[in-house]
Image (tube, rainbow, N blue to C red; front, side):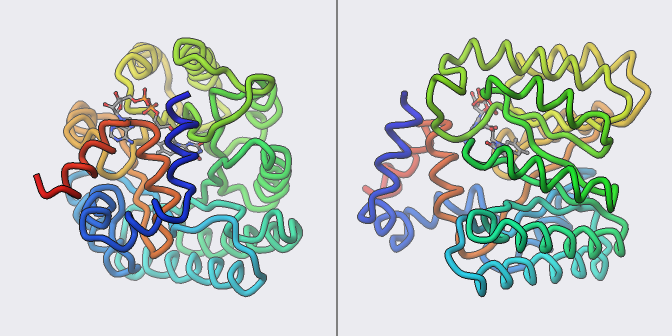
Length: 301
Ligand code: FDA
């Protein structure tokens, strides 16, 4: 409910202007976004790597409306892969398919994933496909399946709030690769998604247990919620295959370092680029306290 309300307000053009064109808005963005350029993302990644944290680099953007934009997003990822190699970073790539042309021309988006997967393979890294609104779930899984069969260095995000996710996992676990389990960040209707926090949590725990007991796949447990991490930590004792935690840049920074110090692999999702507004609105919707932070900055307190 709160999520849907926040997302509805942030979609209005005056809200976008207020956030993107004022200093307070940009200050809030700085907490969650590693700057607008690849250079700034490389610097942030290097600093995180020095602290023992792995990174997933996300060149911000989604829902492109032209072929040129989709090609330019793909090219940005090719540059990012090259930068990972040049700077010797411990990082992989996170991509959104609507940024690469899904919705406009699904075949083009698949071709772009193919090119990015090749570039990532050349520098010894992998590509995770983010999961977007539910209208794209089928196409996203289809593109992932084909690319993973061909390249073997892909992963995909699965959202615990979707009723379909358990059967999606049955289908994709045998393909190997990594699977990022998250709660889900969009506003979805009740015929396809759990609405209550406790239902989403129960679903997350069921799916994380399934992933942690599946040696074919590398689970990436993406949550900042300690209650979701506990059963995973308990299951980790009997798991011999690789797995990792993932958290967002700027969220629960101390916990990220604590888990790393305890010997767990932690990958920080680091977004960068100019198109940061939609990403920021989802972070606001997840935690209305972030809105208070913004309001305080706006009135100068
Ligand atoms: P929950 O929202 O219950 O938060 C638990 C605690 O974490 C909060 O009490 C607060 O302390 C802290 N916290 C959480 N969010 C915060 C925020 N924005 N600001 C400050 N503190 C916050 N979603 C999706 O639909 N598709 C995707 O591909 C991805 N990818 C993805 C990658 C990674 C690495 C992560 C961590 C998350 C995603 N998500 C995502 C987002 C995910 O679905 C979810 O919306 C958020 O992670 C918030 O859910 P939590 O599990 O953290 O729990």
